[in-house]
Image (cartoon, rainbow, N blue to C red; front, side):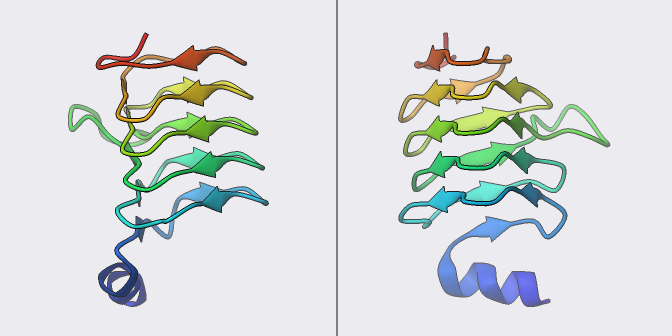
Length: 112
């Protein structure tokens, strides 16, 4: 109930089961969605409209695992049980369906 009320008031939906590290900045958090089995590493920056969600094809552990010091641009979607490596950057509006290596930059739909 509390999570539902917070979501309605602030326009952010972070599942209580999600693992969020320290020093994570959710800038202009409106529209951010973080699924139940997602994890976000320390020092990440997440801009508005980001979705860390499932594809709808899996059950159980079905959400992304984001490493440390990752930047995820506005309105990007990272979908499925994939790993985003430490220090990676995801461009605004990108749709990420495959793992992103450490230090890499992924852009586009689907992201490359």
